[in-house]
Image (cartoon, rainbow, N blue to C red; front, top):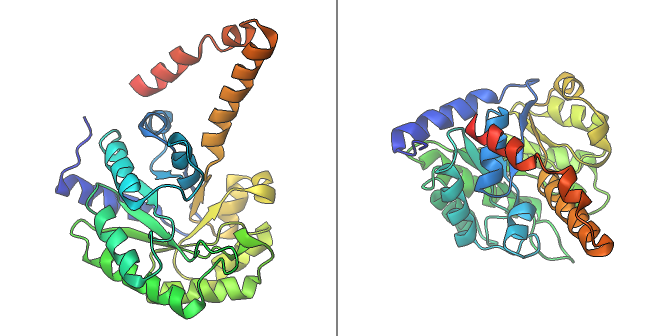
Length: 279
């Protein structure tokens, strides 16, 4: 049974922090439930992250359809299931104010999590990201709460503009620099369009950079990301939707063909999964 005492969590936080080295490009895959976390741990990854979209799907909801309480319960369940460091996608802090962000970090730090991210999104389609000054205030409040966490807490600041259409790279970099100054431990701009943009971000900040392997970036190797200066590589909801995609394909095949050939093709899946989890 994983150890989730305060001392054990503090040790995991320090282990997690040490993974973040410029150019390390360590793989930080995203689980969607305790079972997938156990599988990823069994495969041999050093640390794991949650995925908001993947977790929401386990609840039968759309992305951003879960509450702070849902996410905290999810975090406790996963932290109790694995021995390696776990961090969470804490969305936009589940509120618009700096106080909301601080509360989210304080609660997250009590679950066994080693870290988490706060993004600058608003949830408003007409104004998808906060104005820079408001975003910095929110991040500063989160950083203060992270610094006060008894066991430590690695805070990732996310600049979301590229997920909402064409964004100005210089503006995104300026925002990340402001987040760094406000106390973020890791910087993250999901949706960067190419490796040149990744390199520009990494060379413009001194804190470790996380990159989401997504879209055009998926054609690059870990080695290429490392050369660009990336510290951490996450996958977002890709693994969750890959698994659910296999479910859809198999279910549709059974329904439309009236045969069970696809189940036969996957007959060793249970054995494979059990072997990974049990070591």
